Each structure stands twice: as C-alpha cells, then as structure tokens.
Length: 166
Image (cartoon, one colour):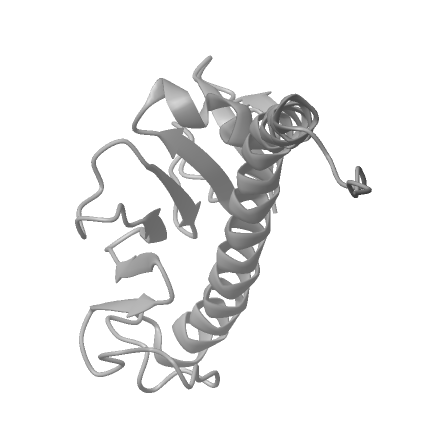
C-alpha cells in the first residue's frame, strides 16, 4: 500500500503562523498611527473651514459666532449644528469666546488620554494686537507625536506655543 506524503507538517504550519503573527505585530501599530494621523488631518481641515467661516461671520456681524448654524459652511454629519458644541465623526467641536476647538473623543466619549486642536481668532499679545493662531494640546503623552507635527512658535510675550500662525 502506498501512502500519500503530500502536505505540511505541524511544525511548518506553526512556523508560518508565527511569521504572520510577527509581521502583524509590527504592521498594526503603524497602521493605527496612520489612521490617527488621517483623522487628525480631517479634523484640522474641518476646523480650518469652520474657522475661516467664523472670521467672515465675525467681520460681518461684529461678534464671534456661537454655533455652526449661521455660518456659510455645513457638515452633513454634524450631530447638533444649532448648539455651541457638536460632534463630527470622532471629534467634539466647540465655539468659545476667543477660539474654536476640536477635541478627539476617546472610545468612552470623553477627552481622557486624547488631544485638542484650537484655533484662536482673537489673541491679545500684550499690545492689543490680534493674531490668528492654531495650537495642539496633547492631553496624554501618547499624542505628543501628533502635536509635535505642528511647528513650535514663540509669542512676543515669550510664551512658547505648539502650533502655527495661520
């Protein structure tokens, strides 16, 4: 009787599974980081769009906007555009008296261990000058790499700000 000896041994199969596991463990963190970077760029684009619209609103109405409704932009996935705070995707946007912010929501719906992007459209620099400024504030050291992607600048009063002048 002739035995069929084709196929793989258990050791060969385990070696292949181990190699795939090692490659996955190396690639998955890089994939997650690139997804986070893409989400941050989407939030930054949305924030800049809202910011530019808010500047136009402020120049036309002599006051800062307090909600998304009334601006010349709209987002189909904004959950509450009539409120001063709203969510778009996994970011929570908020109108403040001197800025507009976008904070990354964690899986629990809080800001714990995330980061916030701010765009200031009224920033007093000690001499009653106003400058538009964007900053990134990491709420966890885990996101320092993202905020470090922005330039570091020094304001005339000596304050160092992570962000860029826009």
